[in-house]
Every structure is written in structure tokens, then in C-alpha cells.
Image (cartoon, rainbow, N blue to C red; front, side):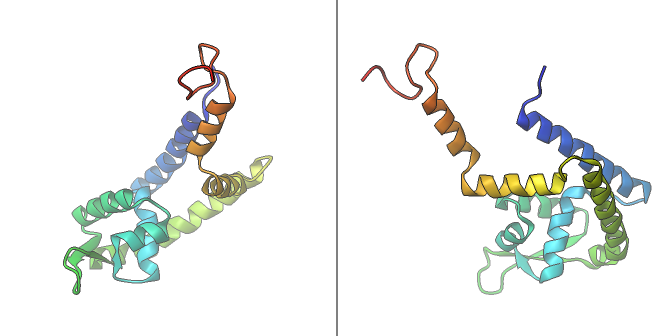
Length: 167
């Protein structure tokens, strides 16, 4: 059975994230791969709002909120109300999170090297293919493509999908 695109992507992510998580664990770190984009965003500027973290990390705001909550629980970041707007949450690396940076940066460099080696083994570099796919989907989202595909194909009963009946 041929795997669908979503299944392939989830499996690829499991293979990559699982390996990175194991590398952290082998080094005695409880750091999760999903924390990396948040830490990298915080290295650009501190404090950051959850919305700004999401923007810099290239993740959704709900994902940023969930990840920051997990990181706060593990003592890697601090979250405080904004000075001007108390509803806003300002995130900073904690002392514990900052102390991990040298070890994390070693892991990130090793991970980047491994990714370059993987790219070199493939007919087309995975990183370039993923970037191209992201750009194409940002230009024309996948749900738009699905709607176009549905409109172009007859439905199960000989009608075009989305129409109430013959016109």
C-alpha cells in the first residue's frame, strides 16, 4: 500500500525527532526537539511574547503556547505578565535554560552536520525539497489545492463535488 503524503511526513518527522531525542537522552539531557525553535527565537531577543516566538520560530501560536508551557514546567524558561499589558506573556530563558546552551549548541551543530550528510545521500536535497514545498504551500495553501481538485473531479454520483445538482 502506498503511503499518503501526510503519513510519509509524519513518519519522516518521527524518524528525525526520535533520533534527535535519543541523542539528547544519550547525553543525559531531558531537552525535547520541539523546544529548539523556541530557544533559537529567544536567542534572537528577550523577552518575547508568545506571538513573537511563534513568528520567529515558524510555528503556530497554539504550538508556541504549549511548548513554552512545557518548557516552563521543566524550568527552562520563565513566563511573566507584560508590564504594559498584563494579558501578554513575556518569555525569557531561565538560568537553567541558559546553562544548557553550550551543550545544546554542540547538539545542534552535530544535527546540522548529520542533515547535510543526509542531503548529500539523496537524489535531491531534502532540505531544498522541504523549503520548496513550504514556499509553494504558503503561496497556495493545501486546502485551496484540495478544493480545486474536488471541483475538477466528478463526485460519486456523476455530479461535480460541491454542487447541489445539475445546473
